[in-house]
Image 1 (cartoon, helix red, strand yellow):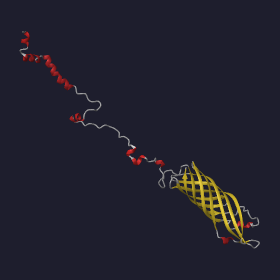
Image 2 (cartoon, rainbow, N blue to C red; image 1 turned 60 degrees about the horizontal axis):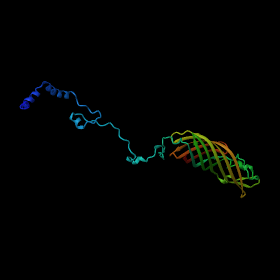
Image 3 (cartoon, rainbow, N blue to C red; image 1 turned 180 degrees about the vertical axis):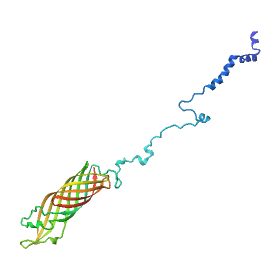
Image 4 (cartoon, one colour; image 1 turned 90 degrees about the vertical axis):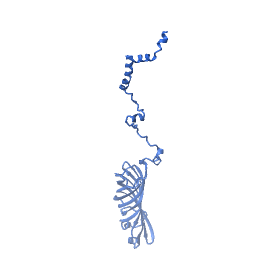
Length: 281
């Protein structure tokens, strides 16, 4: 009987529950606590872009460095050689291309003045020795070829080379009348020199000024025509000379040089040479 009467008025029962002071205070406290505590922020930056745009805050871009370029992305430079190994160099390069240690081979022209009248000629004891003191042996112009092989290490030069000069004179002006009345004419004068030297250089960019002290073995062969009979004499002597000049590297492996030479002792009086050459190491 009591059970049936308890459920006859459900509306009254709900109103009594809502009218409870404790329950109402609980419901009123929930919105206030929700506004007091802000939602936790994302420490890792994974908030969606729509949430940032809704409050007017732009999404920051990640601060990352671009990846290094790959070889296949730049085919023109993938197989490029290092800059120091590129050859040939530009003409008259400012880099010290003349200062590297290397071997040289040069060939060129030489010209100057030589004297052979102080040399001891042998070969024909019956020939008048006075002929050795006259033209052209007492001073003659000579022009010819010069070949050098050289090692340059730590600004020190070590040279080995040869001279193949040809004398220039008028044959008719060399005719002499001997004491016995015969006519003697100098038909040929053929000099040759084997040279070696030690020196130093101070390169400045592509230019290398140098100084050498040269020792030379001079050989001379003279042929006299005496009453249409040829007589040959030979002589050999040693001499010293000093040479100075410059070497200009148009490329690292190709150069040109200009030098002047002055005799100290021996047949060499003075000479000048112009050469080109190759440098390798």
